[in-house]
Image (tube, rainbow, N blue to C red; front, side):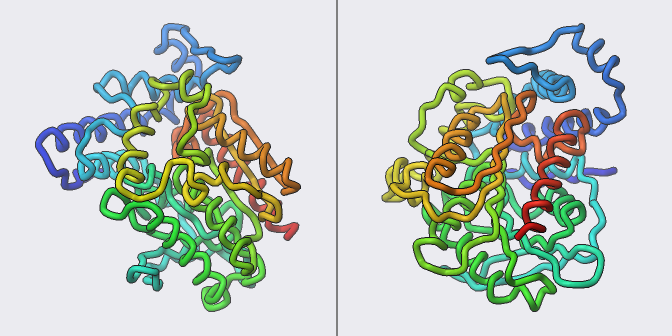
Length: 364
């Protein structure tokens, strides 16, 4: 497979993007390497922290990342270069999972048209729909960076997926992205039948920053008294931008998402936005009342700086009477749902999560 280099905005950015492609080439080989060989390449060393042992495949991935000089999700202060790096990394091991159809859409938003992508499952008859928001710290990420994950959810959960390309910071500060996310959910409610989906079973979901948006959409749907989502699918969500948790300290570096990444994202998203980091319009864990929310499937990773706030949000919703299915994958890192093509624990966890999504929506 030939991978083209996305345009970056500086020489340094293009160099980093090339390194990202090199890392991606290494990642493509991981599923073909037997576990004993992986352990041999790691000289028999394992990483155990806070009672969890890091998945061997991810340990080797992180070692390869360090070998080409990368540390963390963002390795530049140039926003354009950071976006190019993620696109290059995602493209380097994309699988192009087949689904019945993929359609590019434009839907109305509060500040103009919003791009969206509709994935249609195989088979006849109305299926549930998942309105999906990609991760990337509200700054990077796109429909393309999460195309494979949306395809896998569509195929394996047997659901329609509407992926919404919300506005990103720093060009658009908070709460622009969540306004677009809500507009996407509202549009899906009105047009699901036209897309062949069941208008009575529409869930929201996303990973990381996208999980944050899904949680905010669920809160707003409750407060504005519209039909609630059938389910919240929250992969390692950001739930409290003001948090200083133990997991942020334990996993501050070396496990794909770093504390520096979190600070960089937060600054671009909130500085100059007129919203405090503890404002419940960006930090759902800070909401005074979590009762009456849609049921939630919350998934966290053991080696993730966001682990604790995801766990806390699950606990807070459950304490407020919300049905919560919480699953923590102790051996994995942030972003594991996008790493399913690498095999190992990421593939197992992603398959299990999608199977749980399908089961929850079937009960709805």
